[in-house]
Length: 290
Image (cartoon, rainbow, N blue to C red; front, side):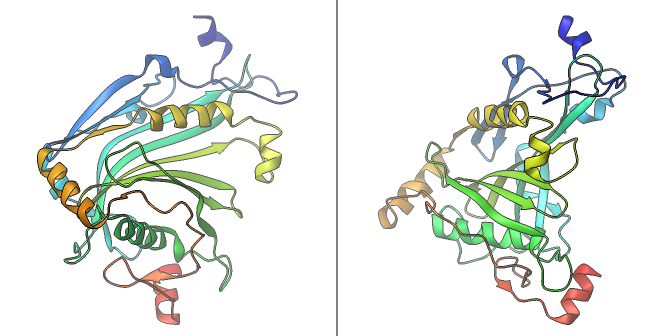
């Protein structure tokens, strides 16, 4: 009860020194399980309710097993990748004793795929999965320029192969060094043509560079929450997926993604498949960037 009073959204005074904000309590996080065509995806995520914050921030959409096959156009300007939302949360992090909200984080889980699933590409294969990641990131971010020829975003950064799932998996960061924005992605295929994306966007409520923001508001509580959610993810393959993986291991014994993945060369866009990266011509630049 004391924390409810100590850490609250009311800003009545200025923060002095480094602020270490407090967010939701992960130890009270509920476990969620989704049936994805027979495979079971489980993870833990807390809810956070507070006065004067909309309940929609903690909304859990209804999900049916075969929603995985019914995707809708996403937000990328190329409209080459389609999505379906499984889960979303928004979290606030408050400073102590009436200094207000000092950080926020948004968390979403999407099922996604190219609008036209490729016939000869199996995302369960690590190299094909990496190609899909390159295409998706480029469709989502690669077109955005800060002045002609200068990419606003960089990715993938802090690439990490995740080896404790039965399918290829990767953790990466997307960074905007102009607007000082970061998003963390945890990605893995769930079928030969469907990918699950856990994305975490967060902001520290301070001005300046990333380093200057960190000297005012600590990102540790935010990153701890993100890491706890990621570390709670479990995937139990369906019998059909198990068979596919076993067959794939005959030609590709190691299903892990590459240990290193350098940042993509942007600005760029993708072709109609959503997978092949191409340079932007003037017509595309005008259509995508405006």
